[in-house]
Length: 144
Image (tube, rainbow, N blue to C red):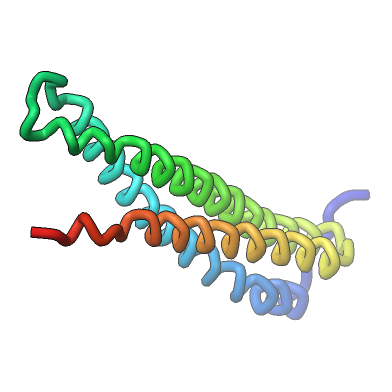
């Protein structure tokens, strides 16, 4: 079946349908930026701790923080992967919506499933960020 140019009414309907996913895509992109920054800070801290010589007694106790940094990095990595897949799903929503208009294929169910998947992955990413934040805030970090 050859694609048929959609009417103005169909295009306006599709644009209205993809407005929410477009906003979600912007939010997820900003969230990915935040996660990347946090991962970079964790990696920088781990590299600093690895650079402390083992014979430096005054700073050797700091190396005990490496296991906590590994847990934080793992949570942030999983959050980042979920956020990226969420962004991919959200982009697919927009592609499927416009592509289906050209072929006059009903898209509502497919778009709904992709949107549910994107939101579930985004929520999973937020949960991992919350868990990482909880690990990062330790009482001993604020002792003088």
